[in-house]
Length: 464
Image 1 (cartoon, one colour):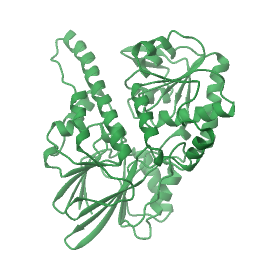
Image 2 (cartoon, one colour; image 1 turned 30 degrees about the vertical axis):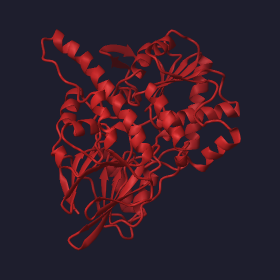
Image 3 (cartoon, helix red, strand yellow; image 1 turned 90 degrees about the vertical axis):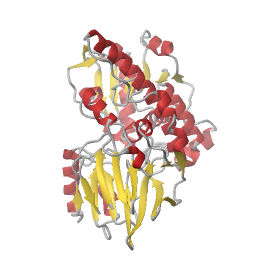
Image 4 (cartoon, one colour; image 1 turned 135 degrees about the vertical axis):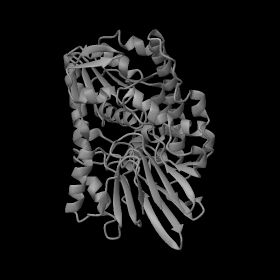
């Protein structure tokens, strides 16, 4: 068995790992790389393998950094299947179509600038129409039910607790008379997060390939993060300001809405409007409501007792049209606006930031990991000025970072996750993490007696 690391190696974006075993070629994840515009375009457009030569794709969850380059893969000759849990397939379909729409809009804007400079136009990575061709290739499999991916290779999806439908993937490979089991973590969630079940720790595997996004820091208790979120909202309302939250339309938005709903039910949320300004988030919420089998017991009990949906309450409105979105910037009263994208690189959040970032009454709330060279990272790093749509803005709004709301496991749970296999593990492979996080986690794992740990370079391969 050989693994090629084509993305999210020594970084946290563009997950893509090619597995060669028993004559088959399987792709774990097909994520969109996010970074500087020129590098992003080249990296995502050019695969380092032949898409038509793949036997299958296995998808852990629907986030764009894990699924977002599937349309390009299909465009370049991949014909399926793509294995995923039912919620992941449903979510990936709407997210990829939305991504295609964004690719088209972004390239149209960029080409206007290029034309002014006398440069040749570029094509989008893929279009909304390209993205629509992915959906028929999905093969849905429920959690805990092994299925054959290729001859001699079976896979099983196991609850990862990261977003709706997220899964670790346990692969069993029978090759040359030997059986090898690889556990691929995907993105690992956390215990006691809103809505979803807790992640299941690894079992019965020889090798563990796991993310290490937050390998350098344990997270604060989610309950404390909920209180920080609450306090930031109250503080901003007292100033008469707006709370602007860049959030992924899938996963984070629903968790924030549920958290605000709990505050409303408890009577601790001021009677202010809460807007989710993202058509994608609305569609994602409808998919969340379609899959209550993924909810944790606390959420199910909240629904049973309250007799209302977890993701809807009286103060909440989902914004759909551009006109409605623009109208929010004309209003001056306190409110909460949650809008995509989560790293503030595209979408309606840019307009809300542009219109509100220079007002000290307002708050920009950063609630997740921010990739290098993104607007979200610049805000999290407290840069005094930022560029939005090519213009500079002074950051006068309060910037609040709440790491405890992350949907990724922190250092403590990552260590426990790896230790669950320690008695039989032949090695741990760290991916989806920057070098500082990986180094810190390796030290923690060594303290726990786990010493067979590798942190591969991008575009290298490893024989198991």
